[in-house]
Image 1 (cartoon, rainbow, N blue to C red):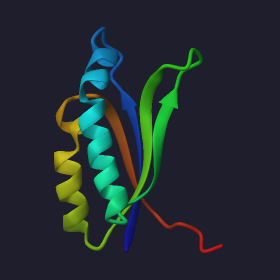
Image 2 (spheres, one colour):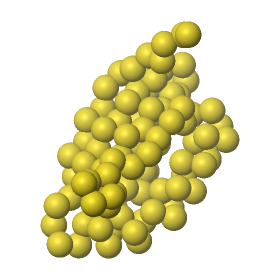
Image 3 (cartoon, rainbow, N blue to C red):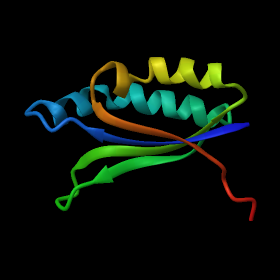
Length: 96
């Protein structure tokens, strides 16, 4: 399996938190589907000092790069403009 780490920062505009709240149910439904299909290794929110969600980290895995690209192209936080700065890196989970 090909593994990737996604480090994404939310927008800093006035509507950023509301966009996240609005799209969060769709994002979590998709994350559950990824988990059920063995594509999500781990994920969660990046928090600011006040405990507000300001970004995300996900470690995902797919059989092919095309499968990854298809998921990425349809991720609600991407298509809905929640994540504004996104870093995607190839990754390998340590076998320990």
